[in-house]
Length: 126
Image 1 (cartoon, rainbow, N blue to C red):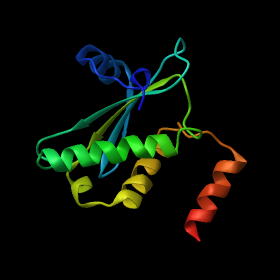
Image 2: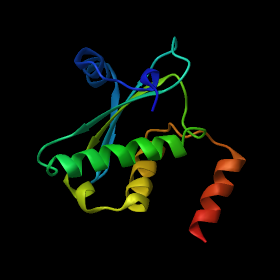
Image 3: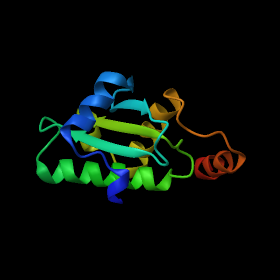
C-alpha cells in the first residue's frame, strides 16, 4: 500500500481516535474521520500483542491491507480509517475477515452504493 494511503504517526492516530466516530463488531473496531481536504482514504492498523505473536499480528495486518485494496473502489474517499483487530481475528481466514470487516464498514456507512458493487457481492454469495 502506498505511503499516502497509510496512517503511521502517533498524533495522526490520536486525531482519528479523539475526533472520529467508532463502529464495532466482535472482530473489529473501526474509527472513521471525514477529511474534506484529502483526495483518497488512509488507513491505520492496530493489532494488540494480546491477539498473538508477531507472525500472527503481521499476517492480520497484511490481510486487512489486502481487503482494503480489494474494496478500494467501493470505499468512500476523504476519510481516515483506523482498524483495531480484536482477539477472534487470529483464528479467522481471509474470507471470514473480509466479511466481518465489510460488515463494520457497512455499519459505518462508508461503502459506496453502486450497482456494480452489488453484482460483485451477488457473485461471491453463489
